[in-house]
Image (cartoon, rainbow, N blue to C red; front, side, top):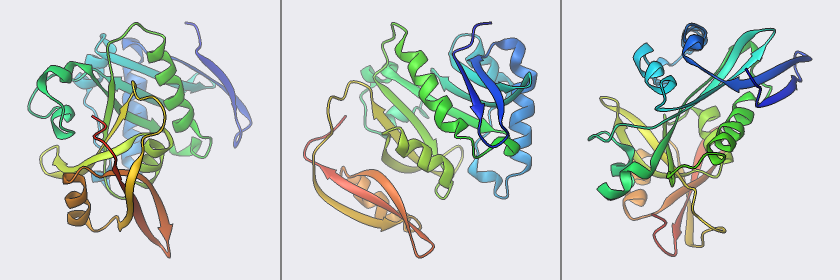
Length: 237
């Protein structure tokens, strides 16, 4: 199977390749996810996918790529074409029903603990979006959810130019930031005002988001995480 990328893991000084994943890779995908979940201190910070959900993606309802070192899957990333239902993230960011088919999700991203620190999450994010761009697709919005204080994943989304559009309970009551990136956006958006809000102050963030503010980045101050919010001069979506 052809590779989409080849590189060197700087921490281990061994080579790795990235390729598209297929249904036959499912046992290895589940093995990586199980390893990642097992070492998590706070299990609520990751919303794992079931066998059936991975199969749904691999059967043509999305895209998956994986990084392999020494013929072993060490990391993967997925895009999902979501079913249009009441849980659709398009509703949460204020899209109309006619625009929901234009949404694709940036789904789960896992890296085996032993191979962290090699920027694999960032590399796979860039590669999977490049693969999507090669296709003749009709998607405009890339959406995803991240738990507050899941710092690596929050940083990952901001580094891709994604913005927080909502902070709501999802998955049966778990609080999640809802990120979005508009693939049709040209140039940098303009903002009228900016403010930093402590990440732990959920209601203050929700109030700003309800008024149309967007979360743009985060920073650490004296051991506390703050999110930068800005009010755009016009609605982005």
